Length: 433
Ligand code: SDX
Image (cartoon, rainbow, N blue to C red):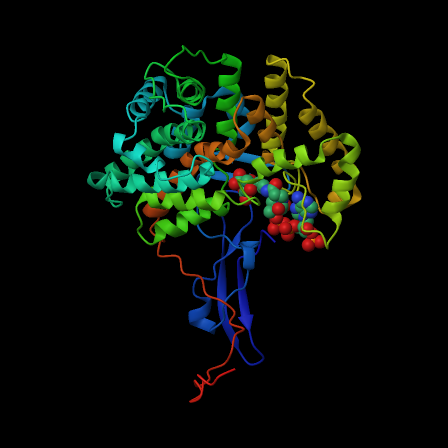
């Protein structure tokens, strides 16, 4: 269909309208339906947006059939192998890999903004110690809007850049604070001498009473995990950020909307759900029972970490995550960790099962990430907060691209109305039942 140039809609008597076909650099062409309603009085209908492109974007490209993921044209496999997370942040934000000088300056800028306003710590005290970290993240990241009135002009490129730096720099600090708050241990301040990931691991695991030295293998593994989560085209949370941003809301509020959406088990909440599922399965002998539950239409259970709206082949991130899993478990001498063996066996059985083959259900990025994070000493209920830490740069890049897009306007979908026709309120509507 890639040679289609336009689509003409006719009724019995006449041609209603001609819809142009737009072509991108690669990937599916699109039918431009922007004027369809004005010219025909018709809406398009696409719940879940299976076949809908919401915008033009130059940031990330996914080919779900081929299992391809490119950030600004670079394959995820090469970026995960040859770059660090802040290099990838620079690439996603600015479109090109940084020179050494540019990276040093970017890294310095991020480092200088890792602390949060001291009054922000007061927001934590309102939460119970057992509050889910994502509940705290929604509250505290949203509260950042109240601390930077001086730099919230979304039409100012300088303000937008400042908000980007502040969010990429402060989200790890807030994520670590969520963990510390749940343990009753004091918050750890950032240490400007450390790299982005070393600093995060120290804020997560150190206390004021002892020195902490992060294992370099684990630092590299977490850095790679953040790269794998950095962006993923128009996924649910990124689309949420774009829609929130289209109203002119400030970037802290928009990123908070993305965090809220990511929390769902069908999206970023899946990594936590995978680990809970593996613990529930408990033993390889129980796998067939759970596979059958996942296939049973009358059972709401789904195999968490499997399936994807776009990938109908392997999620390239899942393969990289499995490799990282091996490295971390071997480094920690956990290579026989039952959970990992269970995950490998579950993957093998599922990929041989007719149902999963026919529905093209492969392990996605969340299938192995929970096991790696578990091995890194990250509590299960913190997994989605870790996902948010990686995805913050992608959300910001899409928000910034949307603001600068000349076609941008407030997002306002319509509907197919199936409710009651107009009717009058009965005079005796307060009659007793
Ligand atoms: C992420 O969009 C992104 O890019 C997201 C993400 C990112 O980086 O931002 O990649 C991150 O969210 C990864 C996905 C994490 N979620 C999970 O692992 C939860 C389990 N997966 C499913 O909930 C599901 O696969 C989704 C939500 C991921 C995708 O759902 P779709 O595309 O709407 O597919 P569907 O629900 O229409 O399923 C198609 C069929 C259905 O059967 P039929 O109605 O055709 O008979 O496949 C079945 C589903 O029942 N199916 C599953 C299944 N996933 C889909 N059956 C069992 N187990 C599963 N996991």
